[in-house]
Length: 79
Image (cartoon, rainbow, N blue to C red):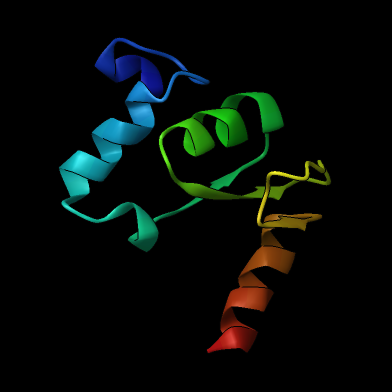
């Protein structure tokens, strides 16, 4: 949870902490969120791409899906 590191979304601190903990480059991480305000804003401010699930739309998201099943089918179909 983002509050575990002493900060809550939309702060970019939780996202940056995950990048550091995983020892990955920003381009290797995709945030999947359901809130444009909390998830998308925080991810983008940390330099991460984000997809939205749950029917929310926002021009900053790289893709939007109605639900996680639709998202997972897209991932499987793209392999």
